[in-house]
Amino acid sequence: MELYCHEVTVRFVERAVVPPYEGSMIRGAFGRAFKESCCPFPHDGGGCPLGEKCPYGYVFETSPPEGLRDFSKNQQIPRPYVFEPPEETRMEYEPGERMRFGFTVVGRAVEFMPYFVYAFSKMGETGVGRRRARYRLERILAKNPFSGAREELFDGEVVRNRRLAVTWEDAAREAERLDGGRIRVEFLTPAQVRFRGEVAAGAPPFAALVQALLIRIPMLSAVHCGELWREDFRALVERARAVRTALDETTWVSFRRYSSFKKRGGSLEGVVGRAEYAGPLGEFLPLLVMGQLTHAGRHAVFGLGRYRVLAA
Image (cartoon, rainbow, N blue to C red; front, side):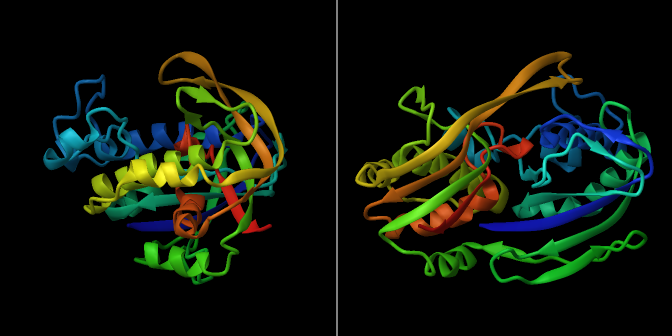
């Protein structure tokens, strides 16, 4: 399991009006720019004639490798990237102001990083938000949020081959700093986690959070990193039921979005706030720590389901 985390900085050259949840805007504009940057063929559901050699086809229309068809037949294939919207929610940016957002790439998708950089630059030329405000791509940093290591990948002019992989071992070392009996989870963007056919209106039960991560992370690992997990997932979720919700200070929020690709509106919703979980947590902590980067629940590629694990 290898993740590659980046911090993208742009500087607006025009006044920008953005939606209340920037993650949807960023992902939508990125998809259009990425498609125009690397694939001349129409994508109408039939798949690109270039197959997995097409960067857009692999990143946005991911299909499982031949050996994993049975493993993934009942699950949606997760895309090999995750956006993290700016932590400070703003509706407007004046000319000269910066916006920063996160962009995490999974496994072999990092090979397409030059395409991603070009797409971010093209987004700035086309414009984003309600007024199609233009920006200048100023900087992209590769970083390891657990070790603190940082490398400049793009300085506004030159793209450099800088890769800082975040591995399961990094997550395991970070997890050792936490208390195995009680933790706090801060849901930073709306988290919608389904468990036994239902979505909790409050903080997801701990077993629900573990199950969501055990659906998402092993699939990312298998499809994009070539590593198939062979754990007893059902037994892990059952053991997670011994952990209780000790504090729930979350609230349900909902944002409207419009997909220009599908020509229809929709909603991005879930819980935000903080919760504390108490019980036998130790074996689950590396999973929770890694999940901070992959996110959990629905619409993770938009940046939903982002959370932070802290000492209680």
